[in-house]
Image (tube, rainbow, N blue to C red; front, side, top):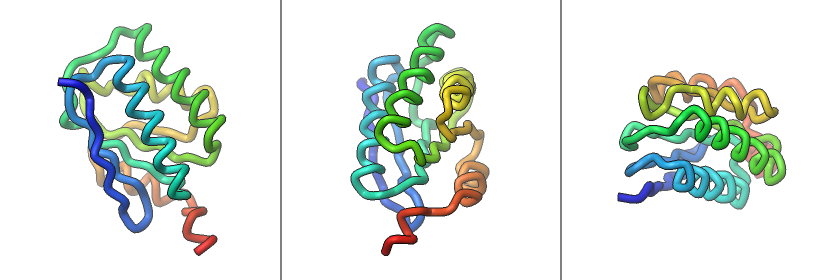
Length: 130
């Protein structure tokens, strides 16, 4: 099963629920689509729920994922705040740390509640222009 995403526009953030097999190419495609969707709607805060994903990446693949997502996001919308939620072995925080080290405002969490608390620390720029 390929990796798929369901997009749910909440009042203050975009919720993306990912499900299926976690591969490098599928994850890159999903995260780029997520960034594009948020950017099109003027949403700066994004929560990606990865609890329904399975599989894992090598350390090298996780490094490549973090580096490529950061590069893409910073070109498309440098003010994106990206919270990733999931558990090991699928989500271990390494790709997130790589992306963070490259300038993307991102963090990984074990619960949606913790991720939302973190996201709410940032102003919702989209709301300012309504």
